[in-house]
Image (tube, rainbow, N blue to C red; front, side):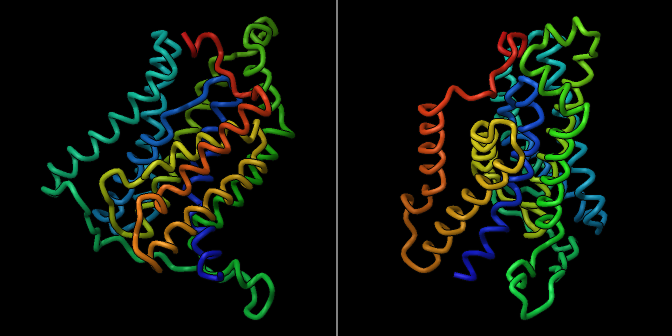
Length: 297
């Protein structure tokens, strides 16, 4: 059980990071379905740059920068050129898949798994005393602890600050905020940049600790993160709970496959759960993550 619990928090981290990123755009009225693609781009470029420089921090910075740049491209296409929100998101996911495979082929002559031996091995942190009840939270990377800390900061930012109030108001009634003199476009662009930032951290947290990159490494985690955005109704703490839930079932499916014969059905447990939770949420409420008319145009 201890092994599953440890795996749960590790599996939660990329989902939580991406979910927080999606939360910013979701609250503003633009449901970003390109989370998967942004994560995948960051996973590749963060690992590659960390390998080239031998520096994890520089690799993480590079991955998040790429993710932010593509997020800005997304919002430009939607806001300036009137592109459909969902088509742009799907195009981002497809483009990221193709671009990473193409870049792998060009740089490494490989379309499978790339091992990055020059990435420094990440040190596991033990912040709590051994023998205490909190010892179960020892032995994780900085990404894992950072994800929890950021969730608490984002909760405060969105619930207790003017920025958060305005962002939520824009999502509920964009036209009214424009009439009040609020620079709506600034908030929308910032929300997409934040989405790119946290998706970048999500991707880096996948590839850098493993010191490797695999084709389609995200494996649907971006879509799972999108579900946490929808069912959380704008609450980062609820999003955290659902991320842990999905992390647990992902860890459970991986553990079962290591103990018994691997099966596609076992591998699909987290995705089946994702569908069930999304259906239950749709039946139980109409939800609050509705795109603005401009993003849906």
